[in-house]
Length: 132
Image (tube, rainbow, N blue to C red):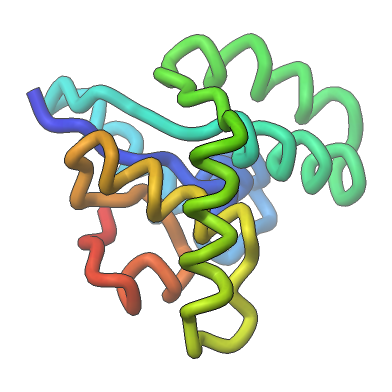
């Protein structure tokens, strides 16, 4: 079974009908389910997703994420070591606009042997990961 990393950009697009990537995200999500892909993410992505949903859409979207999406995710809880490795990725990177959350995601993906991301963030591709 393949493992695919889920980024905030995809979770947001999946849940928010007005997002420009919503239709693509819904189709990609169905395709991932049909191929039986295991979905992985980090606790930092959860924090970022809840914050973005709450700020831009509201509590109901957060509840939908909690009830319908989060249970499908294998979450890597960020500890001090993973945080430090992500920080180092961030500080070595020349990519403009790269966030610590993304840098930690890259380190987590490498740890888990994950080479594909469900994301609408070019930084994943820039870092050498395939996009769903």
